[in-house]
Length: 311
Image (cartoon, rainbow, N blue to C red; front, top):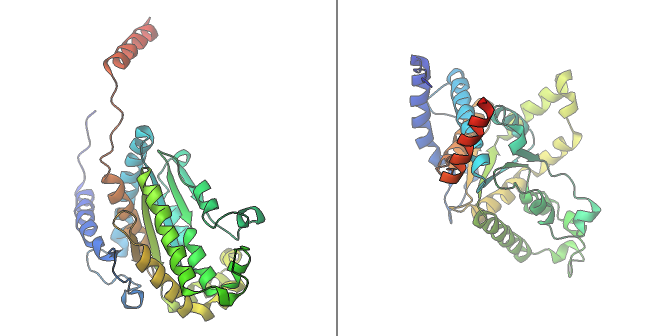
């Protein structure tokens, strides 16, 4: 097959993409280091590209992801788990929609974890997350994830009482040591997942309180977005600092070389989507995936089948 030469615009986008990929390491939380969320930007202030250029970058990343997904599925040795966490209205759903737009839905599973069922509460807090893990060859998205158990549950510890845990009879029984142990269990869980051949990449979409307010008002004012609005989102804004503290501790304690956290400036949705797609592509590309190689016997069988079809 003759490959089409890239246009000058496509070549320019590819050049920017290479520079952008090298820039994204700044968004990664190094293992053993503090996330420093309050010091991190919530909006893109760089000059590498603009909102208009971002569309071409996103298209390129999605195209590259599609090619790698095909190899991931055919190779059938690795999987990929993408965890999304954020304050309300940070753009998680839109990011999933745009980044997955070019992928084969048969190889993608998106799980949005809601309030646990009675059956789920009768098991350990990670049980339902184990059950939703992607198989080899699949890409799994946790839209809100196992981290909810150290985020909303920490801000509202009464939720833990519903788990009917031994020796936890009141909120006073939920100590700092309890949360430290739960974070340790999450690290162990992710170590098992990575050790089984699944890439783990975690994103915190870092939106400002002011931008969140604008987006919530938009959901009220725009009839096509009314269905997205929840009064609870407004009520939870009163706990903004508590959530930020919980995120700070969780991300700082669980970002590792094998299952890193990336803090994505999310005030500009176009930037957040391009950054996430580029990071996902970079991690998948590191696997050096290829299509399975056939044995001489298999190739011989293919030749025989071809002759049979041409009779």
